[in-house]
View 1 (tube, rainbow, N blue to C red):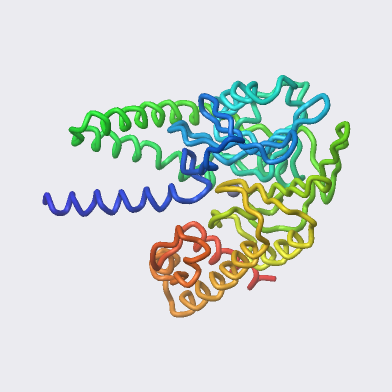
View 2 (tube, protein in one colour):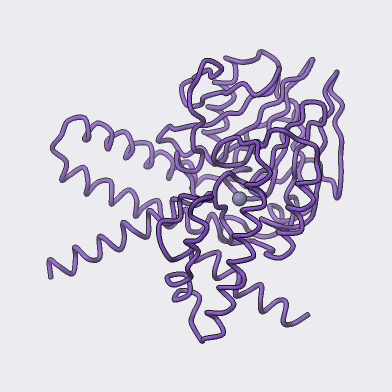
Length: 361
Ligand SMILES: [Zn+2]
Protein backbone atom coordinates (compact mmCIF):
# COMPACT_ATOMS: atom_id res chain seq x y z
CA UNK A 1 0.00 0.00 0.00
CA UNK A 2 2.83 2.34 0.97
CA UNK A 3 4.57 1.58 -2.33
CA UNK A 4 1.34 2.36 -4.16
CA UNK A 5 1.04 5.72 -2.44
CA UNK A 6 4.68 6.47 -3.23
CA UNK A 7 4.12 5.60 -6.91
CA UNK A 8 1.04 7.82 -6.94
CA UNK A 9 3.00 10.72 -5.45
CA UNK A 10 5.77 10.28 -8.02
CA UNK A 11 3.22 10.29 -10.85
CA UNK A 12 1.61 13.39 -9.35
CA UNK A 13 4.98 15.13 -9.05
CA UNK A 14 5.78 14.31 -12.69
CA UNK A 15 2.33 15.49 -13.83
CA UNK A 16 2.74 18.77 -11.96
CA UNK A 17 6.26 19.34 -13.25
CA UNK A 18 5.12 18.63 -16.83
CA UNK A 19 2.17 21.01 -16.51
CA UNK A 20 4.22 23.71 -14.88
CA UNK A 21 6.93 23.56 -17.51
CA UNK A 22 4.52 24.95 -20.08
CA UNK A 23 3.74 28.55 -20.50
CA UNK A 24 0.09 28.70 -19.73
CA UNK A 25 0.48 27.71 -16.12
CA UNK A 26 0.90 30.50 -13.66
CA UNK A 27 3.96 30.94 -11.55
CA UNK A 28 7.57 31.81 -11.61
CA UNK A 29 8.16 29.08 -14.16
CA UNK A 30 5.90 30.97 -16.52
CA UNK A 31 8.23 33.93 -16.65
CA UNK A 32 11.74 32.67 -16.74
CA UNK A 33 14.06 35.43 -15.67
CA UNK A 34 16.57 37.23 -17.75
CA UNK A 35 19.99 36.99 -16.11
CA UNK A 36 20.65 40.00 -13.92
CA UNK A 37 23.30 42.35 -15.21
CA UNK A 38 24.33 45.98 -14.96
CA UNK A 39 21.39 46.90 -17.19
CA UNK A 40 18.86 45.10 -14.97
CA UNK A 41 16.85 46.91 -12.28
CA UNK A 42 15.22 44.77 -9.60
CA UNK A 43 11.92 45.56 -7.93
CA UNK A 44 10.04 43.66 -5.26
CA UNK A 45 8.56 41.11 -7.66
CA UNK A 46 9.90 42.02 -11.13
CA UNK A 47 13.26 42.60 -12.78
CA UNK A 48 13.55 45.07 -15.67
CA UNK A 49 16.18 44.46 -18.29
CA UNK A 50 16.97 47.47 -20.46
CA UNK A 51 16.79 46.45 -24.13
CA UNK A 52 16.99 49.88 -25.83
CA UNK A 53 16.30 53.50 -24.87
CA UNK A 54 12.91 53.40 -23.15
CA UNK A 55 12.36 49.73 -23.87
CA UNK A 56 12.49 47.24 -21.01
CA UNK A 57 11.73 43.56 -20.58
CA UNK A 58 10.12 42.64 -17.26
CA UNK A 59 10.46 39.13 -15.84
CA UNK A 60 9.87 37.59 -12.46
CA UNK A 61 11.33 34.77 -10.41
CA UNK A 62 8.99 35.43 -7.51
CA UNK A 63 6.97 32.54 -6.07
CA UNK A 64 3.92 34.72 -6.83
CA UNK A 65 2.11 33.66 -10.02
CA UNK A 66 3.00 36.38 -12.49
CA UNK A 67 2.43 34.86 -15.95
CA UNK A 68 4.15 35.90 -19.15
CA UNK A 69 7.02 38.37 -19.44
CA UNK A 70 6.34 41.99 -20.31
CA UNK A 71 7.93 44.27 -22.86
CA UNK A 72 7.49 47.84 -21.60
CA UNK A 73 7.70 50.72 -24.07
CA UNK A 74 8.20 54.16 -22.52
CA UNK A 75 7.25 57.03 -24.83
CA UNK A 76 7.44 60.84 -24.57
CA UNK A 77 4.36 61.11 -22.38
CA UNK A 78 3.08 57.61 -21.68
CA UNK A 79 3.81 53.92 -21.50
CA UNK A 80 2.69 50.96 -23.60
CA UNK A 81 2.64 47.75 -21.59
CA UNK A 82 2.63 44.44 -23.43
CA UNK A 83 0.51 41.87 -21.52
CA UNK A 84 -0.55 42.29 -17.92
CA UNK A 85 -0.08 39.02 -16.05
CA UNK A 86 -1.95 36.15 -14.47
CA UNK A 87 -3.89 37.99 -11.79
CA UNK A 88 -4.92 41.53 -10.79
CA UNK A 89 -2.43 41.21 -7.90
CA UNK A 90 0.41 40.49 -10.35
CA UNK A 91 -0.59 43.47 -12.52
CA UNK A 92 -0.71 45.77 -9.47
CA UNK A 93 2.74 44.52 -8.36
CA UNK A 94 4.09 45.17 -11.85
CA UNK A 95 2.70 48.74 -11.92
CA UNK A 96 4.23 49.34 -8.49
CA UNK A 97 7.67 47.99 -9.51
CA UNK A 98 7.54 49.92 -12.81
CA UNK A 99 7.92 53.13 -10.80
CA UNK A 100 11.61 52.20 -10.65
CA UNK A 101 11.96 52.75 -14.40
CA UNK A 102 9.42 55.48 -15.20
CA UNK A 103 7.03 57.99 -13.65
CA UNK A 104 4.92 58.13 -16.83
CA UNK A 105 1.48 56.54 -16.78
CA UNK A 106 0.50 53.35 -18.59
CA UNK A 107 -2.06 54.51 -21.16
CA UNK A 108 -2.00 51.48 -23.45
CA UNK A 109 -1.97 47.77 -22.74
CA UNK A 110 -1.57 45.26 -25.55
CA UNK A 111 -2.96 41.74 -25.03
CA UNK A 112 -0.79 39.58 -27.31
CA UNK A 113 -3.42 36.80 -27.07
CA UNK A 114 -6.32 35.78 -24.84
CA UNK A 115 -4.56 33.31 -22.47
CA UNK A 116 -5.09 34.22 -18.84
CA UNK A 117 -1.39 34.53 -18.03
CA UNK A 118 -1.29 37.51 -20.46
CA UNK A 119 -4.68 39.14 -19.84
CA UNK A 120 -5.98 38.59 -16.33
CA UNK A 121 -4.45 41.84 -15.12
CA UNK A 122 -6.82 43.68 -17.51
CA UNK A 123 -9.36 44.36 -14.76
CA UNK A 124 -7.02 46.64 -12.77
CA UNK A 125 -6.94 49.35 -15.44
CA UNK A 126 -9.31 52.29 -15.32
CA UNK A 127 -11.09 54.15 -18.14
CA UNK A 128 -8.00 56.23 -18.94
CA UNK A 129 -6.23 53.11 -20.26
CA UNK A 130 -7.03 51.47 -23.60
CA UNK A 131 -6.49 47.72 -23.74
CA UNK A 132 -5.86 46.63 -27.30
CA UNK A 133 -6.10 43.10 -28.68
CA UNK A 134 -6.82 41.32 -31.92
CA UNK A 135 -10.58 40.99 -32.52
CA UNK A 136 -10.34 37.28 -31.68
CA UNK A 137 -9.01 38.18 -28.20
CA UNK A 138 -12.05 40.32 -27.54
CA UNK A 139 -14.33 37.55 -28.82
CA UNK A 140 -12.55 34.85 -26.75
CA UNK A 141 -12.60 36.76 -23.47
CA UNK A 142 -16.13 38.13 -23.97
CA UNK A 143 -17.82 34.99 -25.35
CA UNK A 144 -15.88 31.77 -24.68
CA UNK A 145 -16.19 31.36 -20.88
CA UNK A 146 -12.39 31.36 -20.52
CA UNK A 147 -12.54 30.56 -16.81
CA UNK A 148 -13.92 27.07 -17.54
CA UNK A 149 -11.79 26.21 -20.56
CA UNK A 150 -8.10 25.53 -21.08
CA UNK A 151 -5.55 26.75 -20.24
CA UNK A 152 -7.07 28.32 -17.10
CA UNK A 153 -9.08 25.17 -16.27
CA UNK A 154 -5.94 23.07 -15.66
CA UNK A 155 -4.23 25.89 -13.80
CA UNK A 156 -7.17 26.15 -11.41
CA UNK A 157 -7.33 22.37 -11.00
CA UNK A 158 -3.57 22.08 -10.42
CA UNK A 159 -3.20 24.77 -7.78
CA UNK A 160 -4.86 22.82 -4.92
CA UNK A 161 -2.74 19.77 -5.92
CA UNK A 162 0.38 21.92 -5.83
CA UNK A 163 -0.63 23.28 -2.41
CA UNK A 164 -1.07 19.73 -1.06
CA UNK A 165 2.28 18.71 -2.54
CA UNK A 166 4.02 21.72 -0.95
CA UNK A 167 2.41 20.93 2.42
CA UNK A 168 3.66 17.37 2.18
CA UNK A 169 7.18 18.51 1.24
CA UNK A 170 7.11 20.96 4.14
CA UNK A 171 6.06 18.17 6.48
CA UNK A 172 9.08 16.11 5.39
CA UNK A 173 11.64 18.93 5.22
CA UNK A 174 14.12 19.32 8.10
CA UNK A 175 16.62 21.80 6.67
CA UNK A 176 15.66 25.34 7.88
CA UNK A 177 16.61 27.03 4.58
CA UNK A 178 14.58 24.52 2.58
CA UNK A 179 11.66 24.94 4.98
CA UNK A 180 11.78 28.72 4.60
CA UNK A 181 11.67 28.42 0.78
CA UNK A 182 8.80 25.94 0.91
CA UNK A 183 6.89 28.13 3.35
CA UNK A 184 7.24 31.10 1.00
CA UNK A 185 6.12 29.01 -1.98
CA UNK A 186 3.16 27.64 -0.06
CA UNK A 187 2.01 31.09 1.13
CA UNK A 188 2.38 32.51 -2.40
CA UNK A 189 0.47 29.64 -4.02
CA UNK A 190 -2.33 29.85 -1.45
CA UNK A 191 -2.60 33.62 -2.10
CA UNK A 192 -2.56 32.98 -5.88
CA UNK A 193 -5.38 30.47 -5.59
CA UNK A 194 -7.56 32.91 -3.63
CA UNK A 195 -6.76 35.66 -6.14
CA UNK A 196 -7.34 33.51 -9.21
CA UNK A 197 -10.73 32.36 -7.88
CA UNK A 198 -11.95 35.97 -8.01
CA UNK A 199 -10.82 36.64 -11.59
CA UNK A 200 -13.07 38.77 -13.76
CA UNK A 201 -12.06 38.12 -17.37
CA UNK A 202 -12.00 41.58 -18.94
CA UNK A 203 -11.94 41.93 -22.73
CA UNK A 204 -9.90 44.56 -24.55
CA UNK A 205 -11.48 48.00 -24.94
CA UNK A 206 -10.19 48.28 -28.49
CA UNK A 207 -9.66 45.66 -31.18
CA UNK A 208 -8.16 45.48 -34.65
CA UNK A 209 -8.10 42.88 -37.41
CA UNK A 210 -4.81 43.04 -39.33
CA UNK A 211 -2.68 46.06 -38.41
CA UNK A 212 -2.79 49.02 -36.09
CA UNK A 213 -0.07 51.61 -35.49
CA UNK A 214 0.42 53.79 -32.45
CA UNK A 215 2.49 56.94 -32.94
CA UNK A 216 3.58 58.14 -29.52
CA UNK A 217 5.99 61.06 -29.86
CA UNK A 218 9.08 59.73 -31.60
CA UNK A 219 7.97 56.16 -31.20
CA UNK A 220 6.24 54.07 -33.86
CA UNK A 221 4.60 50.95 -32.44
CA UNK A 222 3.03 48.52 -34.88
CA UNK A 223 0.52 45.90 -33.78
CA UNK A 224 0.48 43.16 -36.39
CA UNK A 225 -1.68 40.11 -36.91
CA UNK A 226 0.51 37.94 -39.12
CA UNK A 227 -1.83 34.93 -39.19
CA UNK A 228 -3.13 32.31 -36.78
CA UNK A 229 -0.69 30.25 -34.74
CA UNK A 230 -0.38 29.87 -30.98
CA UNK A 231 -4.04 30.94 -30.90
CA UNK A 232 -6.45 32.33 -33.45
CA UNK A 233 -5.53 35.91 -32.61
CA UNK A 234 -1.87 36.53 -31.78
CA UNK A 235 -0.49 40.06 -31.91
CA UNK A 236 3.13 40.81 -32.64
CA UNK A 237 4.30 44.23 -31.41
CA UNK A 238 6.93 45.60 -33.76
CA UNK A 239 9.16 48.63 -33.21
CA UNK A 240 10.60 49.23 -36.70
CA UNK A 241 13.12 51.92 -35.68
CA UNK A 242 14.48 49.96 -32.72
CA UNK A 243 14.27 46.68 -34.66
CA UNK A 244 12.57 44.97 -31.74
CA UNK A 245 9.70 42.53 -32.05
CA UNK A 246 7.54 41.33 -29.13
CA UNK A 247 6.10 37.97 -30.07
CA UNK A 248 3.91 36.88 -27.15
CA UNK A 249 3.64 33.09 -27.26
CA UNK A 250 3.61 32.94 -31.05
CA UNK A 251 7.36 32.56 -30.63
CA UNK A 252 8.97 31.91 -27.26
CA UNK A 253 12.61 31.12 -26.64
CA UNK A 254 11.37 27.66 -25.59
CA UNK A 255 8.47 25.34 -26.39
CA UNK A 256 5.08 27.02 -26.17
CA UNK A 257 1.75 25.67 -24.90
CA UNK A 258 -0.12 24.14 -27.84
CA UNK A 259 -3.64 23.69 -26.45
CA UNK A 260 -5.07 26.29 -28.87
CA UNK A 261 -2.60 25.76 -31.70
CA UNK A 262 -3.39 26.13 -35.40
CA UNK A 263 -0.52 23.88 -36.35
CA UNK A 264 0.24 24.34 -40.08
CA UNK A 265 -0.90 27.97 -40.06
CA UNK A 266 1.47 28.58 -37.15
CA UNK A 267 4.42 27.51 -39.32
CA UNK A 268 3.31 29.89 -42.11
CA UNK A 269 2.77 32.75 -39.64
CA UNK A 270 6.32 32.27 -38.34
CA UNK A 271 7.53 32.65 -41.95
CA UNK A 272 5.79 36.05 -41.99
CA UNK A 273 7.44 36.90 -38.65
CA UNK A 274 10.87 36.16 -40.09
CA UNK A 275 10.19 38.68 -42.90
CA UNK A 276 10.18 41.57 -40.38
CA UNK A 277 13.41 43.53 -40.02
CA UNK A 278 14.33 42.94 -36.39
CA UNK A 279 17.46 42.32 -34.34
CA UNK A 280 15.86 41.39 -31.03
CA UNK A 281 12.92 39.19 -30.09
CA UNK A 282 11.18 39.76 -26.75
CA UNK A 283 9.10 36.59 -26.23
CA UNK A 284 6.07 36.02 -23.99
CA UNK A 285 8.07 33.48 -21.97
CA UNK A 286 11.75 32.65 -21.72
CA UNK A 287 14.55 35.08 -22.56
CA UNK A 288 15.22 37.67 -25.27
CA UNK A 289 17.04 36.32 -28.31
CA UNK A 290 18.45 37.52 -31.61
CA UNK A 291 18.72 34.56 -33.94
CA UNK A 292 16.11 33.90 -36.61
CA UNK A 293 17.47 30.36 -36.66
CA UNK A 294 15.61 29.68 -33.39
CA UNK A 295 12.34 30.50 -35.18
CA UNK A 296 13.27 28.07 -37.96
CA UNK A 297 14.06 25.46 -35.30
CA UNK A 298 10.64 25.95 -33.75
CA UNK A 299 8.97 25.64 -37.15
CA UNK A 300 10.82 22.37 -37.59
CA UNK A 301 9.61 21.19 -34.15
CA UNK A 302 6.01 22.09 -35.05
CA UNK A 303 6.20 20.23 -38.38
CA UNK A 304 7.73 17.20 -36.73
CA UNK A 305 5.14 17.27 -33.93
CA UNK A 306 2.25 17.22 -36.42
CA UNK A 307 3.76 14.40 -38.49
CA UNK A 308 4.63 12.21 -35.50
CA UNK A 309 1.39 12.75 -33.63
CA UNK A 310 -0.59 11.97 -36.80
CA UNK A 311 1.40 8.75 -37.28
CA UNK A 312 0.73 7.56 -33.72
CA UNK A 313 -2.94 8.42 -34.04
CA UNK A 314 -3.09 6.35 -37.22
CA UNK A 315 -1.77 3.40 -35.19
CA UNK A 316 -4.86 3.75 -32.99
CA UNK A 317 -3.28 5.42 -29.95
CA UNK A 318 -5.35 7.75 -27.78
CA UNK A 319 -4.17 11.34 -27.31
CA UNK A 320 -3.00 10.44 -23.79
CA UNK A 321 -0.96 7.46 -25.09
CA UNK A 322 0.50 9.55 -27.90
CA UNK A 323 1.47 12.26 -25.41
CA UNK A 324 3.55 9.68 -23.53
CA UNK A 325 5.15 8.16 -26.61
CA UNK A 326 5.77 10.85 -29.23
CA UNK A 327 9.51 11.26 -29.62
CA UNK A 328 10.73 14.80 -30.30
CA UNK A 329 14.11 14.37 -28.65
CA UNK A 330 15.88 15.27 -31.92
CA UNK A 331 14.94 18.91 -31.09
CA UNK A 332 16.56 18.81 -27.67
CA UNK A 333 19.59 20.87 -28.69
CA UNK A 334 17.34 23.84 -29.56
CA UNK A 335 14.81 23.26 -26.79
CA UNK A 336 16.55 21.78 -23.74
CA UNK A 337 13.27 21.45 -21.83
CA UNK A 338 12.80 18.24 -23.89
CA UNK A 339 14.13 15.65 -21.48
CA UNK A 340 12.92 12.48 -23.20
CA UNK A 341 10.05 11.15 -25.27
CA UNK A 342 6.64 12.69 -24.64
CA UNK A 343 4.81 15.96 -25.13
CA UNK A 344 2.32 17.98 -23.13
CA UNK A 345 -1.03 16.22 -23.38
CA UNK A 346 -3.15 19.31 -24.04
CA UNK A 347 -1.11 20.04 -27.18
CA UNK A 348 -1.65 16.46 -28.38
CA UNK A 349 -5.38 16.63 -27.63
CA UNK A 350 -5.55 19.88 -29.58
CA UNK A 351 -3.73 18.21 -32.50
CA UNK A 352 -6.34 15.40 -32.56
CA UNK A 353 -9.13 18.00 -32.49
CA UNK A 354 -7.42 20.02 -35.23
CA UNK A 355 -7.11 16.91 -37.43
CA UNK A 356 -10.85 16.30 -36.98
CA UNK A 357 -11.58 19.94 -37.89
CA UNK A 358 -9.50 19.59 -41.05
CA UNK A 359 -11.13 16.31 -42.02
CA UNK A 360 -14.51 18.04 -41.97
CA UNK A 361 -13.40 20.84 -44.29
ZN1 LIG B 1 -0.23 31.50 -24.42
